[in-house]
Length: 231
Image 1 (cartoon, rainbow, N blue to C red):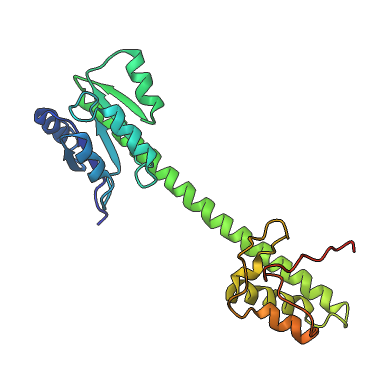
Image 2: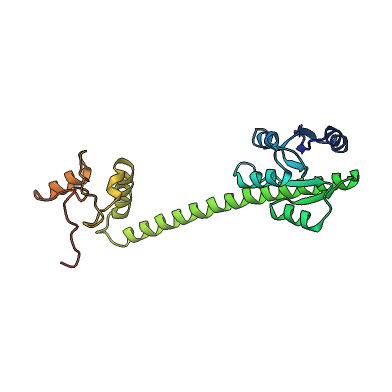
């Protein structure tokens, strides 16, 4: 049996919480009496699926609570519905601009509250489903591109006997360099290199360079100028 969706009601008046709890008796209802408590509950697993938020509260008003919810990566996805006695267009506009998805005025009408909560829960479920599909399709595209590149490389090798597995060997060597010696990814120019930079740890590129030429040195060593490709 699927768990019921969780609704967080934030209001400093206990009677308002009891009323909304009765209206939303088809859901698991959580309650918070102030802003800081609401922020804590919203960030705690299992998180609420929807938040009904009063505006006029002590310590921290509903607008500030909404702003903080939308500023946090962990809670910004939770739909917020303001439930308040403020009727002015300016107040409603401010709440929606802060990221709320709806604005319900008091005294509340039970059928309207149930319908709006249900609709926003459905929208949230659809959005999460679409995001999962996008992630799945993106992974599929990346895998397809990778296979295509490897296929083209293999095809090039079969058409030229001198290449022999060159592409695969180069790919393997580059991966090893990135994994075992990250500093080798950085090439300092003479103007960028700090004066105190030196290779205090044996560097693989030094060993390989010396095996090819006795006078070669590591490109990471301080004081060794970068070779000009035009010289």
